[in-house]
Image (cartoon, rainbow, N blue to C red; front, side, top):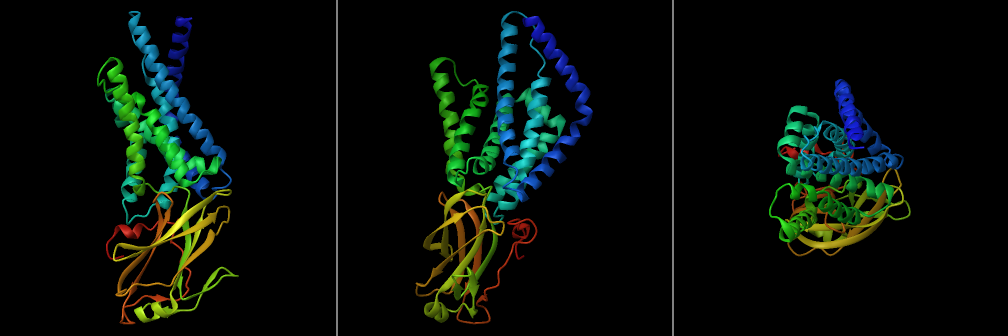
Length: 370
């Protein structure tokens, strides 16, 4: 039986070597699928589900390959080459990263720490398609390689659970942290911290801490399936039409007399119901936090608004309204300036602004002054 399995494994390895000439096709196919799924977010749930299952399958193959090779060495036989499992894992990782990357590129607030997370994903995607570096990582740094796989699991869970199971962003993030902790166990095991019970407990503890650390850094992780389609500032609001009305210069006197409406249209997957917040900040300090309930499925985004009437004394300065999830992930921001000088004060004129290009992809925020 063992010899039959070995022969089958070697035959599959040979097949992998022959098909490598078409290997370059997978990254562009995956990226194209990701872009299509982003724009057809309510119609492509099955692909995300298949990728999630594929990541689990690749993880099991990698684990089984390691155990099989260890068993062969124990019997005095040569270990099997890792080409087959590594190749399968690479294909699934490429597809996963290319599928999820458009979601993160579009929902990242580039003026925040979220930019670092998305740039990390860009680097991981690049690594997955550069064979010399990828295979060197797989062969020489197994602990880092399994960590790379755990990162892929983390992002695919973040993207697919709101689509498949209609979980909120916070619930999906919690599940992604738990999944990453589980899938990081082989990575920690390859560190060979210690043997026996102490080593096992240390391995579990480090894996759990990875998940806890990811949850603690949630403000730096974009909400992959939520983004702002449109936003506006106005002195009045037509609640029946759900549309901003009127215009005024944002001077302290005008704000005290009329208040200010902040309107946002937030795109979310069909079936998703979630509570978000308009967090009003004055010169970086939080002065108000107003809850909103949104429902997904509307292509133009769920229209929601808040009305702030109580502005503090000395309201002059820079204001920012952060749109955040319950767990503190920023979806987007509205900015305005309050000044006694009407020439310097922002004009709130009910104009509904839409982000240029891919919704949420404000790459100009990376360049100061733009």
